[in-house]
Length: 196
Image (cartoon, rainbow, N blue to C red):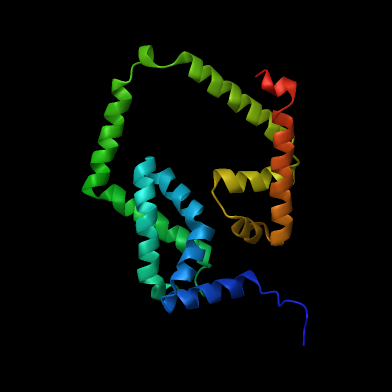
């Protein structure tokens, strides 16, 4: 009897998840949401630019995934890529709908109505200082660390997706993200950063 666990590839795990979804296993859906929920939300938020609408559309996206998983073809795209495409289509469908057009008009009106006289200059300065401190902390990272942080936080990719894009082992990506965040945290508590 083998005492060592069998290690499965990411592709094998994705195939198993898809198979379980097609069998209507709600635990598989919970796993998919845990793996891809943040990615879906960020993709949608970038398109609709409204947090509450993005939250609603994220839920609708996962409902669409649950109902449409039989159309998924692993030969055409990886699971994460397919889920991101479903999210993008959900957001675009919303923008093309009447509700999406009304929301965009309201956003533009809200922007016009807000005068510079009513803005909070202290909050603006604090945000600018935080941005400078983060920028300096990012510059202190190695090039490889900056890449994984950029892919994770700006593009909203999961660590598994980053590993796939960079063609690096998942463990390597996890280590780079962890050490990058530790390095940034250590820099941000230093007095010269706190003064910003």
